[in-house]
Length: 319
Image 1 (cartoon, rainbow, N blue to C red):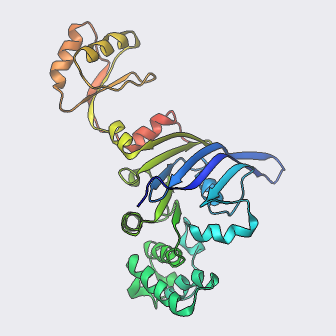
Image 2: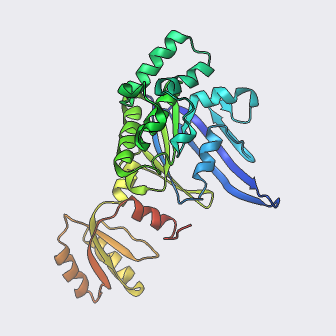
Image 3: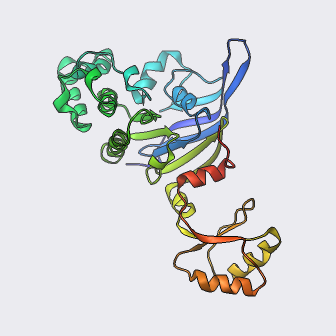
């Protein structure tokens, strides 16, 4: 797998919706990033931040107001190549019922390749393989509408797999599922990426399920891509530690003390936080700090997760 092979390129992307009153609303503004083959990228953002609009643009359901998107070198504005784009960069929706079209599971999975003109014998092979990957082969004669939410979503994924895409976009694809169903879909996504070398973009506002999942993360807030970071960078930001808060007047003295004593720390200029790793002797460090005349306003061990970091990036505000 070549993680340096660029397969999606997004430049200065802007998209505007027109309301019923004719007024325009900006959903995405100035978004630029690229995706390499084999990556698993999580797009984070509150509802209404622009995640679903980005997914639709990547799947060529809508075209940019300004800017460019290229999927394997194909511009999404090229109306003659829309189905080529959708075959290469497929999408799994939030509600699986919107993606199920047949009355029998195996017929539903076969729908996509049939429309691509795949020969009948190959379609049967693709259907069997796709259902096996999502562990739904025993349900191939069932009605999809009689299945659980998680099972329906796996059938929807099988239908996408049968079209042999290089990239799959999961747009809030676990939002309507119970915890067990969500775990099953996340496990399936990981399997597709790690065992089948399928590049994945997954958007969700349920941040707990995305921690430790991706190779790279992007944060969208009010239509703008405000931050990108790798899994390694996330680990560094979310490491458990001992948190100390001090008054603004004491920041410089505390920072100098940490540097002099080779104590690893992070500084948030707004919240004035210092994190000491658990390996450090926190009691001894507290004594030394207070001996310098610095009185912490709060301290204690803190578990930091992806949601904490996300809220920090967007300033702790909800849509």
